[in-house]
Length: 418
Image 1: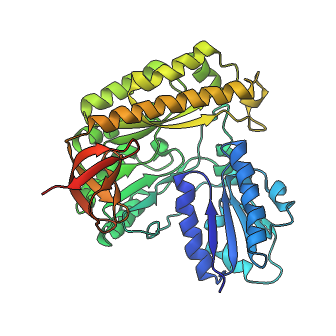
Image 2 (image 1 turned 90 degrees about the horizontal axis):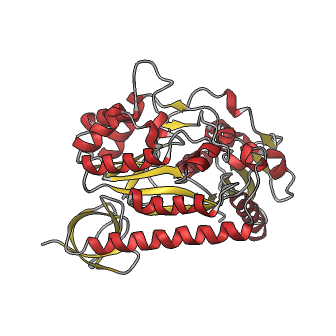
Image 3 (image 1 turned 90 degrees about the vertical axis):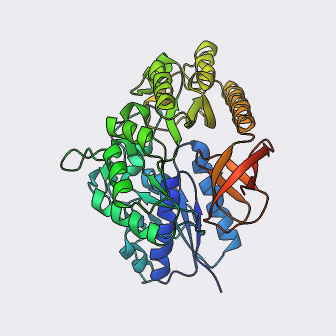
């Protein structure tokens, strides 16, 4: 019997939304369908999505192929022109149960992609996790009001809009009652949370509310944040709430002031360094990840060197390195471009810097006692999101006290504490 298959590209929010679609498509009886949830952050992501669509048609010749996600929202005609595709739906439509119910009827529209910029609300969807009992994700926000010169995501996601705090707390409570030990608050620009809601709600106040009103939740984690938007309540929560995990993934993008200005970012290099220093003062065990772009247009060797040294100056541990990719219609695509070979080399140097930073982090943990959330029988994550391999098997979702014996270069090696 054919099964529903969902192929997901891109961010955690896309992964979350894939699970929403899984439930809705299953309820609509789409048992023989392939849903491709695309990403538009780079040209390579779009290429991989198109490749996956062609492969899906070869492997599932009788399946209904439905394409959605940011790339489909931004350029639906490009995917509709593919012979392999049965339906193209937008980012708003993919979250509506009626969309999938309609696909079981003859004569349903082939392309349903409306104006995402007109959307003003984000619906609350409760999902049960990602196939294991380790952690669950709760969407608190969608969209983005900023216009970074390299980015097309606002045109795929629409304006920033927040889920009301009461709905978020109710979702977190229900998931905690079901046994999830860790909840991740996710969205496109979560530090913009609350600006469109009545009152004076912020991300920090939301975090405080969740932890206060769901005392049985062991761990709360944040997805990527824009450090320049971090509000005072969030800084206080980081300092005072032990159940808020000591790991922040920062949207930094570059470490050179002129590059940041040309990117139309809202922070300078010094802001990033100061933020990381302040977070470590408030929370000495804090560990940082970061997004960094290599080879942004006009980037010279000196400008790149400033980004490279940012890894040390901010004390970054987990790097997500993106070779710059020109996105049609963005201001950066019209700027003088860096040669592709240079971009690849610089991306490689950044990745090497990241490998060295992770190595130092792993080596520094030897002998430390840590708390590990098991993701499967032997693999888990520490509070600061470091991968951990446990000597003995444990159930997924279990919180284990462990002692670090060493590392294998990619993860900590640990044994359960007596």
